[in-house]
Amino acid sequence: MVHTGDGKGKSTAAFGLALRSWNQGWNVGVLQFVKSAKWRIGEQTVLERLGQLHDDTGEGGPVEWHKMGAGWSWSRKEGEESDHAAEAAEGWQEIKRRLAAETHDLLVLDEFTYPMQWGWVDVDDVVETLSNRSGRQYVVVTGRRAHPKLIEAADLVTEMTKVKHQMDRGQKGQRGIE
Amino acid sequence: MVHTGDGKGKSTAAFGLALRSWNQGWNVGVLQFVKSAKWRIGEQTVLERLGQLHDDTGEGGPVEWHKMGAGWSWSRKEGEESDHAAEAAEGWQEIKRRLAAETHDLLVLDEFTYPMQWGWVDVDDVVETLSNRSGRQYVVVTGRRAHPKLIEAADLVTEMTKVKHQMDRGQKGQRGIE
Image 1 (tube, each protein chain N blue to C red):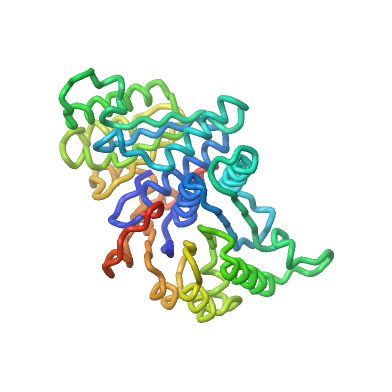
Image 2: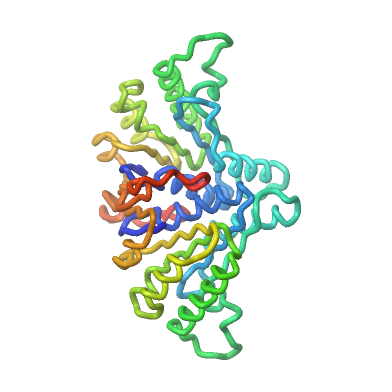
């Protein structure tokens, strides 16, 4: 699945799918391609809390959430200069390992269109890997300007289009909703 | 806010907003305009579970989820014939009471475009009520074919457009994702 377009709701809808998947007892993985691991959103807190609930009580399914940058503990060394391209490439390798191991029932690759757009991750490799993945693994890719090859390979593509936004009228973003 | 269009993700993105709002300790209300109260989705289970978590531990915020039909206990009498138009109109009255009382910080009016489209709820009344609501109350309306007056009155409108769907290729809907 691909959620693309310039409108709101691409990631939010993917996290809504994660909510539903958790409820079905699915193993949920979110791999978030963000510039800074310090950037933490409410959905992460809640989904990790639901994962904790699973661990404590058996309700729902397990949840893992990993971020690029310092969030990718397996790729980062102490004191090392940040190298976004290398981190994105390593992140993609980790995704490939998880797909091969069928770790998750639902895998959200949040903002994953950007490393492809910037040439950090090879689109052909992504398309081939996703097209040939084994078992029943749902994968959602979010982000603007999804590559045509990714759109071609996807089963379900939704474009979120901005029809109107209060920012256009000069108002500030609203905390918690923006 | 309005989530409209023929694509996927309108409701799912609204429930994703509810997730984030809960995490901020907001009072979340979902009023869902569905034909049958028997129709229950995973998001309801999870959001009500989060509301329970709030009641038990103080985490997050309170959550209420009500459905049209038999779900609207304040409008339904035992043995009464189902009257969707009357139930939708009464549902709207309940929403007006909640807006006047500032009951919720986030109010999701799921699939609320349809009772407007079918003439069960007066669009002018909705636009006037929402435009003049007091305090800080976020309202999200989801559904296809949002009325132009509603779009005009909204601060943020996102159209979810179906670019491609595996149903087009003759495959069946996927349980839990569709």
